Length: 321
Length: 121
Image (tube, each protein chain N blue to C red):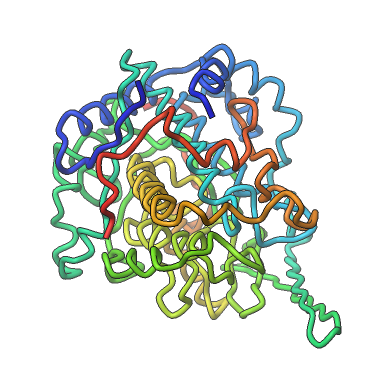
């Protein structure tokens, strides 16, 4: 039976499962060390949760193709949506394993609903309550991911990107700073505007494209950038800003909602294909429908293999705007 | 894709094996496009009326004398972006560096590079 992904604000079971699951993954060490993953400093074991942080960073640093410096293996190009669907499915499988429940689904955060509130009221959303994600701070001091210097089991950032764009070891609490870099969250009108675009992507297949993918990723319209997905990263701030942003469990809530918007778009435009096709030039290597996507933890899959996730999960509600 | 096609490969033993196999394929940190000698070069290309345009822009960033050497690029519409803050674009490289100072406070404390290492509490 496929999992059903539900709203973290309205489904208490989904919320509790997610918090328990990521906490268990953060405390699970399968054996790989920082040295194995080219992170400088003395060797330290990396938790299963943090392996996903490392993967995201390396995918972002892999330029596709390496002859240019814009599109990477997970962002700024067509592969953005299927690559993150792949990443979320893999994390969901890990949650199901440690919770011993194959029906557990990632929850989503409908941030556009919170974006309807006045900017000053948005930090008061229930998603930041003590029984959900906790609040902001440096370090975060409330909720399940609060930092306690005296408790080795409290949530700690162990690997992070530094200003040079390299992964380094750390031992500190999670950081968030709501609305410090952008005034408000995306709105339902922003989501509706994306859903009006009937073409998945188009030339030049990067941050300047006018298609659906680039709108959801958040690079267009330029006057509203950062938009949608990017805007959520930037609004939460702190550890959601660098390439190591999966350090914050909110990362998956954001991407699950972005994936839900893609699912709603697929439902709206069933005849609109993933683009580019495999006959596109090699300059789009890594983004064509049958290209292997960057994978650190399993054998790679292709965008085509991620177009229908119904064997893994479905959403309880595709009313996204 | 069917669940069983991926679930076996997502088992802990399989992940460890995959990581071991893929270790040699990891890109060396700090050697992506734009790295080298503290200078970062961005290359923009476009075609206009049959003519091929190439614009090379070289950046050399410093904060308090410390070189900033991660990947930096410019899109054809003039937006400056930097690998370490991947969800933002800037109209000004100075604004970008201000954002880096805000985002990476540990790297700009006195002496810089003040990450605490190790797994102790």
